[in-house]
Amino acid sequence: MSPLKDIIRPFHTSRQICRLSQGRTRIQLSQKRQLNQSSPHSSPTTGAAEAEVQAAHKYCSDLLIKYDRPSYTLHTFIPRDAQTFYLALRALNVSLSMIPDTTSSYTIGLMRLQFWRDTITKVLADSPPKEPIAILLASAISNLHERTQGRARITKGWLNRLINAREQTLTNDPYPNIAALESYAENTYSTLMYLTLSALPMTSVAADHIASHIGKAAGIAAVLRGLPIVAFPPPPSRQPSQVDGAGLMAGGAKQGAVMLPLDVMAQVSVKEEEVFRLGAEAPGLRDAVFTVATRASDHLITAQQMLSNLRAGQDVGHEFEHEGEEGHEYEVFNDQRHESGLDEVNRAFGVFMPAVTTRLWLDRLQGVDFDIFRPELLRSDWKLPWKAYMAFKRKNF
Image 1 (cartoon, helix red, strand yellow):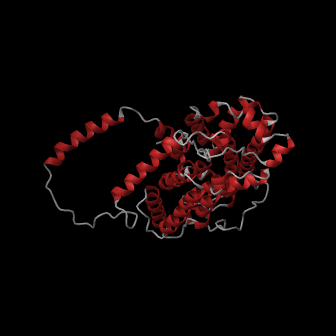
Image 2 (cartoon, helix red, strand yellow):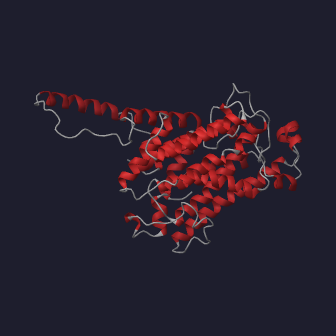
Image 3 (cartoon, rainbow, N blue to C red):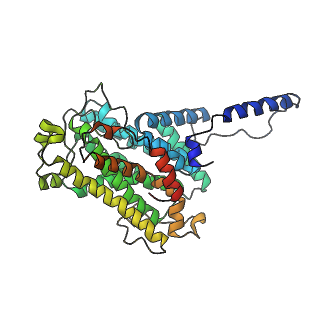
């Protein structure tokens, strides 16, 4: 079944199944009943019953549908064996991004982050606590180990990097320069993609390299998208109803902040107090937003050019700056032994679909002349399912 059919299923399917099951019932009634002689099916997660795993799957799916609909929409393009891991990971990302909204103090926020560090340690030890995201994550990792006979692994350092990067959202410390913003995007959205590639499993320098650029673009766009919410946080009782994968950071922060790189703000003479006073009409604000959005767009253009180079039989065009770091050691699995870099990228293409979401949002931002306070920029894009399907089919962002 194609990804588009997974999104829009035919309505008559259930009726056909119903008729088929009715026909089979008459046959089964006449069959002799026998006790099952085989061993019972065991849960894929030690300490978690099958019912718990199913309930955790529903919890994570519902969380994404409510707070990160684009990520839920895009999960159908992830290879089926890795979809459970993807849902758990993205649910973890939503939970982490909501900590500032759901805690009353910085200290309590730090305690919540420490809870997740401890939880990750238990998950990787196959003894998750009774928490839905932890249960589903442990189940998916157990399944990965079973599929690869223990050869594939999920890097603990990457999971902890996701958690550590979220400490900044507890205080809304400004980014000193655009390089610091890119570092935050690398530690969050690029890392989400590295982890998803690991769950395929895929260890490919070309795939990681493309994921790095797409993740940086997505992370920068996330900070831009969340700028109005961070600058003018709603009361605690009016939390944002959609995160949409952009991680609307610190919506419940006690004091607003303008989360643009300080070097960019200085270049175009944007003053934080004028943003608080004048909002979208603050002098230089649109120029600053344009500068930061251009950096996100440049990363998408770079990823597309790398893909074009691979299709032309060339290398990607430049070195991967993170090669050799933790998690970026490249063991070749059996199904990768005869794959080229392009083959690897094509097989992992579903992981790169956030490029479509990011490009659609940047186009909408350009359409409103970089007025970051326009309310339509916070809404989901109804064109995403179709645009994503066409991008996946054509293997083009």
